[in-house]
Image 1 (spheres, rainbow, N blue to C red):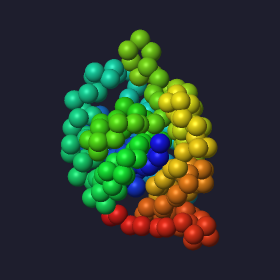
Image 2 (cartoon, helix red, strand yellow; image 1 turned 180 degrees about the horizontal axis):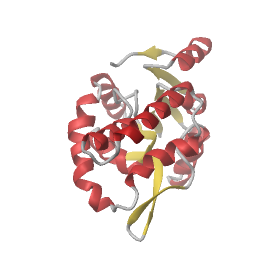
Image 3 (tube, helix red, strand yellow; image 1 turned 45 degrees about the vertical axis):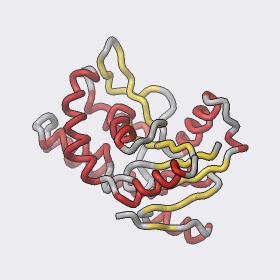
Image 4 (cartoon, one colour; image 1 turned 45 degrees about the horizontal axis):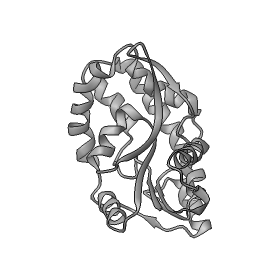
Length: 219
């Protein structure tokens, strides 16, 4: 089997789904703009620089789901997908996904954003396999805490290899492609056979130039 691994935010999506979700909830009057807007911007800035604390980053955004059930959130996440996400999905990324699928490659979306927010996006793009940060649910309600290994930085490689094991695949024997924009995904891009930088941040562009990785712009 050959794997094509796609990051989501700033790779397939013109924006960050965590930050957009926060802005969406503020726009709906469900989050206090005075509190969350500034923190959202700070998280985005620190993430882009590669300096953000992984646990704090994931829990900040998962915390927006707290004390409601997936069923409670369902109408809003459907609206979020159709009004905020779909218009920002780039044609170039969708074409690259389709190209891999036509070639018989197994396409996987791997994202630091939580599964509840991103699984509809993966389905919309025709991607059946999603590796994402998991949000804890207790007695039917989101607790605001993460669960398991966070799918970010080195965690993406850990989760990917665990996924391969669950599929009875030997990671070392697979030919793989990886697409990402962020220095936070350097461990993932180092792990794949073919790395491609998409809309790269400054640090990742420098790494790509040093390593001879192709750099493309889909937006």
